[in-house]
Amino acid sequence: EAGVAQSPRYKIIEKRQSVAFWCNPISGHATLYWYQQILGQGPKLLIQFQNNGVVDDSQLPKDRFSAERLKGVDSTLKIQPAKLEDSAVYLCASSPDSNEQFFGPGTRLTVL
Amino acid sequence: AQSVTQLGSHVSVSEGALVLLRCNYSSSVPPYLFWYVQYPNQGLQLLLKYTSAATLVKGINGFEAEFKKSETSFHLTKPSAHMSDAAEYFCAVSEYGGATNKLIFGTGTLLAVQP
Image (cartoon, rainbow over all chains, first blue to last red; front, side, top):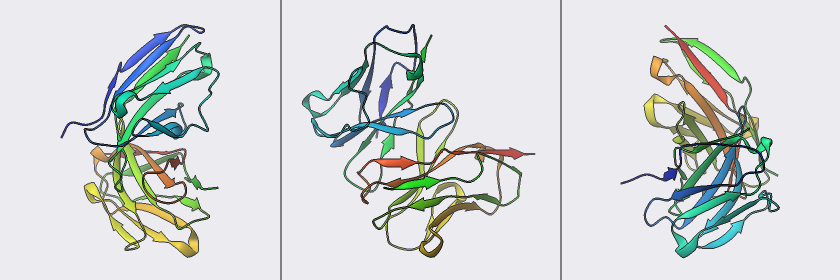
């Protein structure tokens, strides 16, 4: 079974630029999550989708971050414009509504 | 609100020694608790989970954890460390209970294994 795929793996941008990350969850997984992991901290949930509907986006900085999950499969997370403090690893996870979330390898973002 | 505290951001053990990584939780509902491992430049991999069944949970790679409600703890142990265990370990609690709700992670413990 293929795992959660994410791209790109690494991205370096300058502040005020825009960036987008892509996630392809495990086939058939209804729930998809985006977590932000800042260096030295544990991951923090940004947004959770159930199929193509948003379940929880309470910690998403909506003035600059947006996410969508069209057709309930792939998802994209966008930052516009980026700030220095957005430097982090962005992790995508998916769940089949069982007792586990499966994580992708993450996208490491560096904002200069 | 749910929260997790991991005591010790860095733990160093000798190869073959006992591994003990500490995790204490706070939860207003019966908790679902998890331990994840993260190797450099990789995502998180589930080691084990507690979902209100047996209090002693066995996971992959020889790890186990014991849920102690009276101590609000879920410490991770392994009898004999291997060099390949060197990684960062995260304890997490599921908000609102259940496993598909968002996970609240601790700050992680970096395990070093000395030869």
